[in-house]
Amino acid sequence: MGRFNKHISVWVGSLIIIACVLLTGGVLVWQFNLFGKESKTTGVNFPTKTKLPKEAVSSGRIIGSEIIPVSIVKDYEKLKEFLIEKFLIENKICEGSENCKNSLEYEPDFYTIREDLNADGKEEVIVGLGLENTGRIGLLVDVGQGYKIVDWIDVELWMKSMELRKLPNKDYWSVVVKTGGGAGTGIAVEEMRVYTYINNRLKLTWRGYIEYNESEPNWRIVENTYYIHFIDIDRDGNIDIVQEGTEKEGKEYDERGNLIPAKETWVENVFKWNEKEKLFTKF
Ligand SMILES: [Ca+2]
Ligand SMILES: [Ca+2]
Image (cartoon, rainbow, N blue to C red; front, side):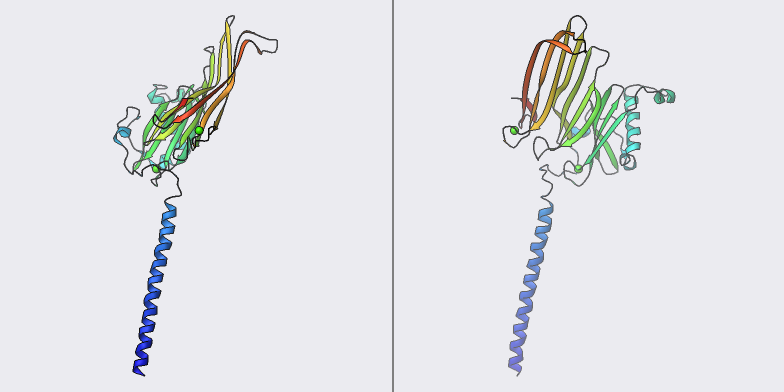
């Protein structure tokens, strides 16, 4: 009997060990799948950095080294107010005068995009400000106790819109910005600009006209209108920028106010991503 029991014990013991091994193995495989997959879902190949590169922090483009509290950055209205104030100080507009601020000719346009651009688990904030016939695009990064402005770029014209895209490919984020202005100078333009997020900074990688109008009475009138497409025309995996449209030049308008062109040209410009230079260059 004793011998028989011993056999059973060995048998049961072995079963328990096998069960334990299988269970542990199963848990490990499950964990690997869970966390392995999780870290791959972002599709962003930027190294995960918790510290900013030196050049980002010491850039002359920083508008003050102060840390903006999270409570301001997270609140659209508060952040807008904060950055408008910065803009006014920077440009010496309305110094100390509340009345002046209240009487600003235009209501400012303000845009925000919140996204973890470098996949380090912390959200970056891209801001766009249109004010006083000019504009700024800014990049705010989380530095622990709050945010710092690491980019504050003059876009020269009024900021009209801003959107985030995967451009030129899944490894990059780019901000596509529309700007416009120039009334009263005889030149009116609308532009598109692409700022690509590279090494925790925003880099201007393309700019082109959507409209370019020049009007010199009794001399020369130029009316250029373009459509801009983001499309991988050569199927190399990188989105290309295609700018196509008409370039008209003339001297007078018809009774409806349309330009009578002496010269009209259809143009198609293709800009391809240059990985070495990290720019879109004309093909
Ligand atoms: Ca981040
Ligand atoms: Ca392409």
